[in-house]
Image (cartoon, rainbow, N blue to C red; front, side, top):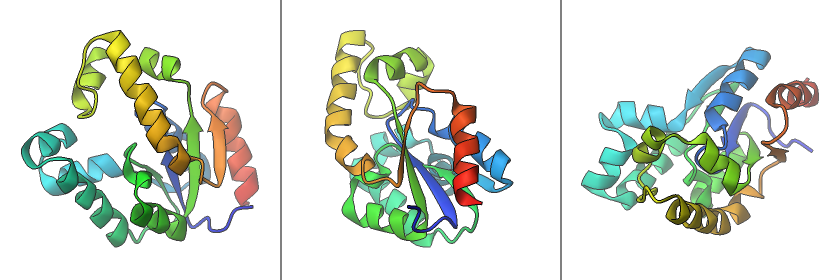
Length: 173
């Protein structure tokens, strides 16, 4: 059952398709779309990687919390940063302000989807070695999935996105 659908927050690991899915869903619903990482980059005047390198992860996580605390959208689909829902105060705000959708994706597919350029942009992906990246993603999944599984809806990202977009629209209206 959907508790609150004034907004929709898409959660999942980097590369799971949160932005792509979010844009399609927003278009289908005639809602606005935001990528929380892009909003934070604009507000901070630096890329996420630069924020991590310059100020550290704690600073970035505070910027994510500030984004959520100040978020006052209505009928907005938001692609969140992969770690955003993995802190109790963030998860509480996400649940309070909208519906959560988890894009569940196997690590092997995530690594296929990410180009070398995309991997370099991600501050927690500190290796170019495919085996090490797989280990990093396995560990991320292990620590983050308990939070992701608190979502209102879990979508297998190996299925056709368009089908889920239509199902969600039917659930909401």
